[in-house]
Amino acid sequence: MRQPEQPKTLHLLIKSQWLVDSITSLGSGYLIHLVYQNSEIAPDLCAEIKEGRFQEGVLGEIIHFKPGMKRRVAMVEIDKVNDFQNFIRFDLRILEVVPFLRDGIGDADQGYLCYYYGNPG
Image (cartoon, rainbow, N blue to C red):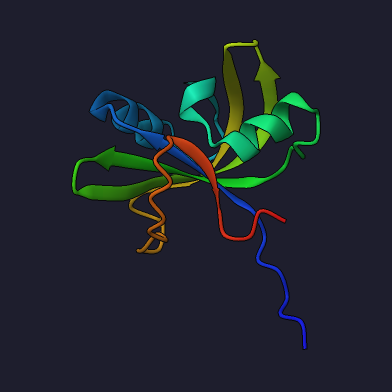
């Protein structure tokens, strides 16, 4: 019997504490954007965006990343993706922020700052 597929979840890693503070102070409902160089995005995701196959509305998690630590900061919905050749900007709607999130994130170190977690469909 075939197992049901997990939905895609986009992990968006950030390193700056000031960015964490800004996102959590805004709270749910606000629109923000994060920008990543193509080299910071997993190749399968980057190709999907560049080929126009990326579906807006995908859920994502913003994760504060420091060596030896990952902490989920916010749940977001991808509102729009803008491809600027050398970098990609994700327009995001904040759904939930800490401390209102449930604990725990999946630990899948992809070596990129932006990647799919779970089944990429």
